[in-house]
Image (cartoon, rainbow, N blue to C red; front, side, top):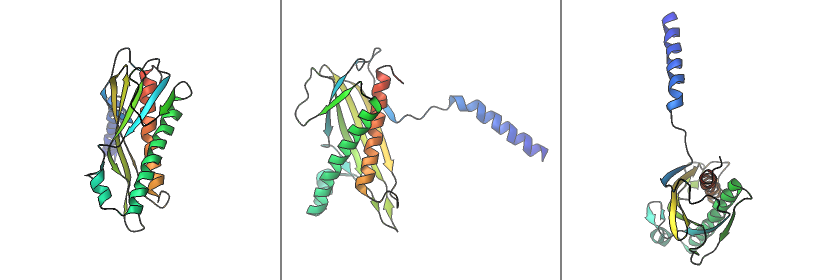
Length: 195
């Protein structure tokens, strides 16, 4: 019994000693970072564009995925895309706060203005039934630019499980969108010297 106690104590001591070297989890992965100082320092207004052109849905190009769906499901997917864009923007603005404003649009970016392009990489809207479910997932790249050049790039991922409390794919995709929006907001705040 004493030997077991000593082994447990030793294991706890080793675990405690190793804890400081375990890297902290980040809600994003930095692909490219400007600076120092960051090209995003002092940015107060950001243009936002959402790019679904290269997305893969359940491992397929969007056009192929939609070709397998009826008209109602195709229309529903378009609604989910709009809701996901809005959720990302909500997460982004909520995290950054009142010091930075975001404008969205469909036209070309003004190269003289700071911008972020949200490029969807992989999406799974998920499904919930009492006997089978798939989570909703989003992988997206945020490319931040200033003066016509992309200076900072991050990759984000989010997943929301399908369950009795999250049965709707609209609900889950909105939650996942908000999560990656918050991650991008955290990156912007940190790039501007905040925490």
